[in-house]
Image 1 (cartoon, rainbow, N blue to C red):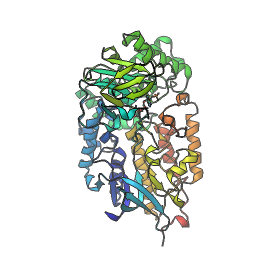
Image 2 (cartoon, protein in one colour):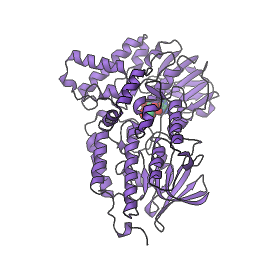
Image 3 (spheres, rainbow, N blue to C red):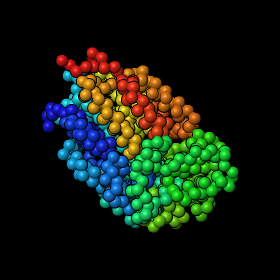
Image 4 (spheres, helix red, strand yellow):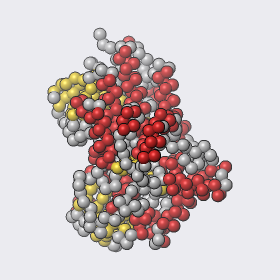
Length: 545
Ligand code: NA7
């Protein structure tokens, strides 16, 4: 594979790469998808940890563009688990004969733009070269792992895994496990393994507001309802804030009586789903402190009711603002939910604010109270160098040799419309910085569709380069800031959404908080007006003669 030339190289074979190659191949472009992994799946190829599942309802955690598939492809439960998502993505690839475009175990290690031939020159696996007119990356928002540098980590004698690097088939039965990190992933792992391991200590730095998922078998009636209503379901997805497929609340918390508030929260708790609890109850939970406090109080009360040991309950109760990515529980094989795990004798929570980890020893974890917690398995559910992490680690160089990392050093990770960066012509990011903060597959779909339309229109009109202006990027960034201005998420900014979970990362907003409908409106406005914000199709942007 030396100096192969393609119209388009697509990097990543997850949701994004699959839809992108499907779309560009339909335009007749000569495409290649490369992925460092051994097969299709992206995030879902590598996240094999126990309990891994999507926390979006199954019906809308899939592609919307194959109606026949929506009608016929089976799924059994309200939420898709990792093996099912992986099987689904493989099914889509095979059904549409996309595998012929894909090369696995092929990692893009560098990409250089050359003005002389107006092409991207990629290095893969360290030495092989590929040349392409367009490069479209779907590297994943959450795929570069964060492994904390805890003193003594190398001295541990047991097994130790980050959740996103979990070895296939690893059995936790009978282990004395420690889970470090109690975010989305930690909650799922803990819920799943509580009844399987001998002992489980959950090292929690920050208790989180998590609500039940409401996962259950999908009945024939429910499936029939979905099949009868796909068009309106996807319409709702694209014309909502969260793209989760439920009716978001239009009612303010302030307009409801105390009884009604209680009823609405209880109903949402019983139905399940974190995003539904935050956005389906009242329309101001994420923007108004009193409404937010109402939701907080309700969840704390549930924890007090569920967790029998008041000391454990106290540690598990969050007291800060409810304004991180809303979580919901995993789904234990014995039906127990997250907080119920802590009623088991073998499951404990270690409050790291009270007793921080001092060091990792050969036999376990030493906390500041002098206690050695013995373990033969440590699970790091410590999250990711999110959003730009997978870009800044690569040598991606645009005009004048500037790297994407250098470009973002000053500005912070940014883009025009979540996908386009000035000085990086014909280089597109699916779910780049400042993309929509929503359910991922629909967000990926609208970005892929915009990129595909832009390429199609450029090809048709002989335009050689698709590149945004710096001014358009600046204005779009300002729009993102304005849209997030009233969000309470700023008050809980010490997390990955703002880049605050990794030392040294620039603290700033990494998403478009206006919701799916507003994002889509923005894309449509740009397109309708002849791709506003992109460099005009002037002489230096025309095809070289
Ligand atoms: P998250 O949401 O970043 O959660 C990581 C958790 O790990 C979080 O609770 C962190 O505590 C904790 N953490 C990180 N470093 C440490 C150290 N050094 N010690 C103790 N605890 C630590 O990642 P997830 O994988 O759970 O979820 C990411 C997204 O994936 C999620 O939002 C979904 O979109 C899917 P903190 O809260 O920062 O105090």
